[in-house]
Length: 489
Image (cartoon, rainbow, N blue to C red; front, top):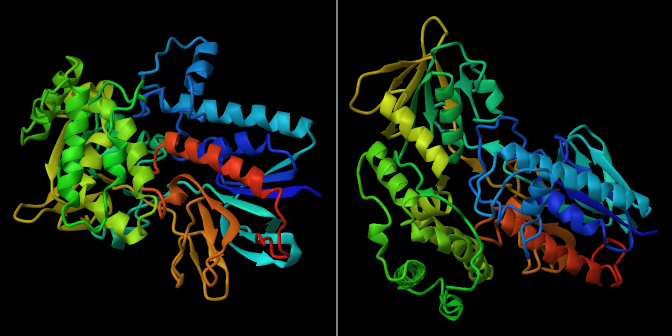
């Protein structure tokens, strides 16, 4: 009997991996576990054409090499696209869905059985000679010889100030699905907690319907503006200098800053970074200035981003998880503003709403949130200011990374629930390691689930590189002898 593969997670990462594994010899069954239709996860499952992908066609592809596979897909269907374009996110969902169905047909014609379980995976554990048993949320169990964890970002971060009010119908714990926001009563006053990508999606949807919107976050800062995110034709970064970085060096921050500024200056033919960005204090003024910089071709920093992501992921892969997290936390502002920059079209729309008064952005998280007496809305107070009335609150403060951990009884928890006591170790091949021996299991982590090994994982190009490498390694490992528990001998 051939290998029985289980893929937990059917979003873009899961489809990217499935497309590779479906063509590997020696597999008899591939089971996918996801409560949504395969390919239509949180990021790309929307149907609203207003929502754009904030990465260009060039890097939003399930094949990391050569011409973008997404570009070919869209061009074949009559879309007039360029590698630099930011396309509606529903098109990425369609692309993932169709690629899955194509590869599924090929696999089934080759004799591979493909199954989709419309539920979540809770936990897994080794079982005898069968490999691993995965417990599903509906109580069923399925077994497989190899498990690939492609869990996405679907657990929203809930600010403490609104946590006591969970379940209130005037509180949305996530900006998605945005279709829910479209059902609000006309002319509502809405508070969005957050000012980054999910918050911007919510603001655009609500402002389109002429709701009055306030975005609030600790920084009150919007992302930078870009016209493209593409792979460079030739490397610009001094990779030897980046590889020489030590996470324990007291001068690490200065060295990283120097390398970043050098890369940006090279992309800009020596133009200083300060002339490529705005230092305005007010959100509307800064957005307007950075929109104009991008539109006039002076945002040269954007042409270093794709290469910086790849290099940072590569050089930090061997660092301790806690060290990598601490370093990244110091650069949180740069990641939020520049790596997660927004397309010009979104910047224009936001600026229009800021200008006409439909939208405002304020720094600071509310000090208190209290339901009003009639149960229809909120009284919201900031420190040092009077209370304001809002009809609805939307949490858009990000998502928890997938938390996977060993329980003392040898069970691997997959749902992020409390109780994991043994830290998860991941090998350089993205394989989960036995907590006692350190030996690699036949369990792989990809995409957002690989955050203990990779710095920047919420990026399809990263997942596509991982899928290619993991499928190749699996192909090799498939030819090796396995012990009764499914582990390599």
